[in-house]
Amino acid sequence: MLCLTDGTMKTNRHFIIALITSTLTMSLQTVAQDQSVGINGPIEKSAYTYAIGVRAGGESGVTGKYRFGSNAIEGIISIQNNGIGLTGIYEWYAPAFSVPGMNWYYGLGGHADARSQNIYIIEAPRNSTDRLGLGVDGIVGIEYKIAPIPIAVSLDLKPNITAWTNGGIGWGIDPGIGVKIAW
Image 1 (cartoon, rainbow, N blue to C red):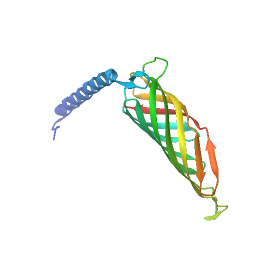
Image 2 (spheres, rainbow, N blue to C red; image 1 turned 180 degrees about the horizontal axis):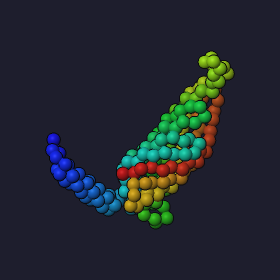
Image 3 (cartoon, rainbow, N blue to C red; image 1 turned 30 degrees about the vertical axis):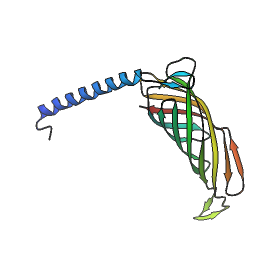
């Protein structure tokens, strides 16, 4: 055990805080210097590899992103219109307006949705319109990684087309805004 008395516990806390602070400082300096080559030349890696956050829009929910060089894979778990959806998108990045940390992104992917419009009266379903859907998605947007803090904000359009098991075809433009913790 590390701590045997109050005096050692306080010393250990100070040591751990100093260790964490110096590790984070060195990590941020290393990440800030990292750059990759993108579609239109050098691209700032936006100082993160992983991000998790929320997306608000037509498809609102939790989003996670893995960046590698000038590409990324993004996943969105959404709740909308009495249902749940899972979306995966492959994205490409390019510098925007010569502003460090700001990038355009665009990409393609797909999604699966499950929806239920059941109206429950004393636990008996009435007017059931349950359905499943599969579709394709595009995305185009702009993202800004706020330099000294681990936050990235984005604004995008995610057009999509869905084929439903009830024979219907749906489509949408789906504008969204995202806020992510990025590291």
